[in-house]
Structures are given as C-alpha cells and as structure tokens.
Length: 315
Image 1 (cartoon, rainbow, N blue to C red):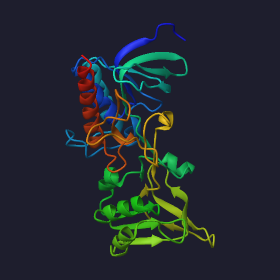
Image 2 (image 1 turned 45 degrees about the horizontal axis):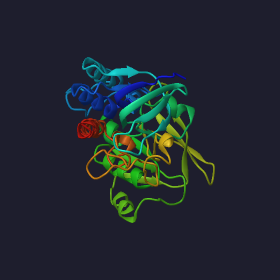
Image 3 (image 1 turned 180 degrees about the horizontal axis):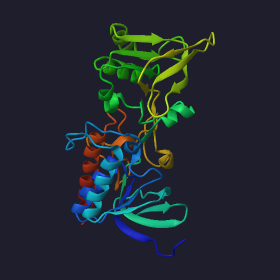
Image 4 (image 1 turned 60 degrees about the vertical axis):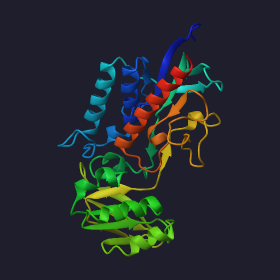
C-alpha cells in the first residue's frame, strides 16, 4: 500500500447516470472529481439496447451510447474516470474529516467528500435464456421498455406490488399482459390486486414458472410450467418483464451508512446527505420509488451541489 495516499476533493463511487451527472456538476464547480466506475461501467443502462425516454434524444439512444456521451461530457470538464472497484471505506464521523477509501484491495485514497452512486441491481431468474435475451425482449423495467411492445402480448414475472404496477402500466400499452405467479397467491397489496383484477387485458397464472424463454436474438415466446402438475405450455409473447425486485448495491456500506430494511441508503429530507458529514448518496442506491435514468441524473446534480456547499461551509 502507498505510504502517501492520494488526496482529492470529491470522490464519486459508481458510474451510472447519477454518478456522471454528479461528476459534470462537480467538475464545473472546480471540485476536480475522481470517479471509480465499479465492475459495470455505465451501470444498468448498458444492458438496455434502446433508451427512448431520456431528454435530449428525440429518436431514442442506445444505452451504451448514452453512457458514453455522459462520460465524455464529464471528462470534458476535467473528471478523472478510473476503472476500479471500491473495496473498503473508512468514513469520518466529524465535519471536515477526511474519508479513507480503498480501491481494488490496495490503493489508498483520501477524500474530502464522497458521492455514493453505486445504483441497484435488478433481480433476475437466472436461467441462461433469460440472460441471453436481456435487451432482446427481456427487461426489468416496464416504464423504460414497455413502449417498444405497444400492441403486443407480454408476460410479467412476479407477485408483489412491483409486478402488479408493471402489469397495469403495460396493460395500457400492450394487447395483453399475463402475470406469472410462482405460488397460489399474490403478495401485492389488496388495492394493487384489485387494480389487476379489474383490468380486462391482464391474466394471472398461479403456480406458474418460466421454464424457458424462446428465441435466439429476440423473444419469440416462453415455455411455462405449472409447478404443481409439471405440465408445460408455450405462451406466444414478444416481451418478458421480470418484476421480482431490485437489490441496492450497498453491502460495502452496511454498518456505516444508515439504510432502510431493504438496504437502500437513507438521505435527509430533500437532500442527498447521508448520516455522515461529507458523504452523499444519489440515484438508485437511495431511490426505490422511481428508478429512472432521468431521476437518477437529477439526484446526481443535487449530490454535487450538496458536496460543493458542504466544502464551502468548511472555509
């Protein structure tokens, strides 16, 4: 390990829309931000082939291109973007204290402020055909990708409020929506179940699991199995929306930063301030309600402004 750790004003952990927006604002404020991308540079959007709802792209944009554009903009103002994984943190509890960060198990960095934008990871079923077809008809975000299935038949996998919300959203766009529920009941709230039940083009199949997603490059159907009878059938659908939850990428901060029962970081009021001075959180790591690229970018802006104001208060 280095005897003299690098000292920086603003460290950004994570490289999605929140992190890059924070970097743009922090760099323009002369905070000379350094970003560590993590193992998935660009975050979840790099698994999306087409982003149709991010402002400024009237014809839509490939997810990887969007993230590349954000990176170029951040670097244009002086952000140092580094590929690496933050593996340990020792955050100061005192205002004006220096936060100590370890990267890739060995590199030591000291930061006056830290912006956490590590995002959240969608939970998937884990079957090979699902992983192969992510971006080709398999999605974990109906709000992001539902538009592309207008007038088509789709399935939603899940039993909770998220699945019910995704299904009712898709029902306004798609010809039909089939919810696949592994058990013989839904976990969604009574209100959400009632909304599902009164939507005519939504069908619920209980005790049903996906056995295989059909298609080589795009979804051409799903083979489902009744887990009681073991009977299988093929559903003629073009879209598969996985709605079994998200896991915030916060394991690194357990016991350090305040988080809710599901692991999302808690920020104070309308700010991005965490429970520790000089540490801010933005994007999906602290937002389990919206989880959109544009809302993540908005909170990235907020985190940079909060960081700038915090450093100003120390002068």
